[in-house]
Image (cartoon, rainbow, N blue to C red; front, side, top):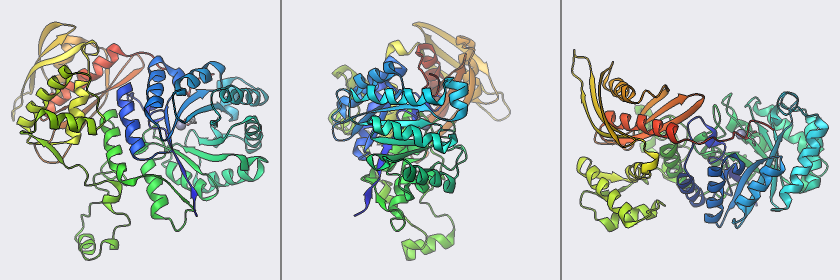
Length: 513
Ligand code: KIV
Ligand code: ZN
């Protein structure tokens, strides 16, 4: 019998800390339901004290997920822990994950606390959390740059106080595999009550080593890995769930563990997270990249045709490739449309909402004859934008682009109810469209990122555009989808502007106390 490796997914918490990747409550719920289908053991649903929106999201997920653990992050403060405790209260299995920094630089410069004070605060935090649940996890933030003696001391103290999982984060992605494994091995050997807890790791990818470090730790005793779909996360991201799960499964000969993950749900999860956050998956990304199972060279193709295992160590269908079947078309009716949305976990609030969405679906089906799940997800994401969140709306557009001529965009917008028209020239039609929009809204924002992705295959595919804007230190991503990529670009730009217009302040857990 192999040990179980607990898969702790933090896409909804650490993943959401990627610039511009903030998600609405409903989007988080959809991802949580997909994580449930994938049989993820622990879903870190958010950081309940960060904002009312985060609190509501954690609570909604705690209500919805029955079979697996729902967790909220909390700093080691009584107020944060109370908020987390309230948010996870409806969960069938609820966990509080509390943390405090332990590296000399964080304790001295950020917390301005002595090591003794940090130990005292951590022990108190476990006591507060245990009032809400027995399932308490403790993280030593920046453990990767902390002193081993101090880590051993604080872990012994929090285990004695009732922590059940001890997490060792490489917060800034500084470690390398053999050294990180050695740290974990010595902690497990030195902490006298180490056998009372599950040892966990949480690695960031600043040196591209998050997965390697996590797997090295598993080989010496870690039995929980914290990771995210597509490796989404702060800066260069977190360890990628799909890579960890498939490495453990594919190399069962060297890993003494197995996960409970339904691997056929991996690609659907990857696509859903990418669509919701607007973070495209690079084509050569392991497991979930579009080329991950594509063989280009003739020698490889020939080998695979003769005997698949000559060049393939995993089967594409085992991770869910090939599942994006054609679902609906021009002739599909309202009932088929509604049924597919329900299967995708998309909530339909009312008959009016359904009618509106169905009319949009028919328009799309006229332009694009085959409608896939990804098209429905994009369509319903646009539908989810309520009038109060849509200060700026594209009413109509005209673009002109011809060899030897300067591209021109003419757009009509609704701005808080008033109709405005503008024209602008640009270096290309997208540039012209953005300039025309700016000539109306004068947002003062800076364009940080522009990316286009085809949602499905074929030249009639919808282009999905992500635009990242920054204004006064706030960063927002906007998405737009359309069979015309200039229209998709204008929609994405306006979506980001709407979010900047409506956005509320959030607290980042990496800041204070
Ligand atoms: O990277 C980190 O240290 C974290 C902790 C809060 C676990 O995300
Ligand atoms: Zn982290």
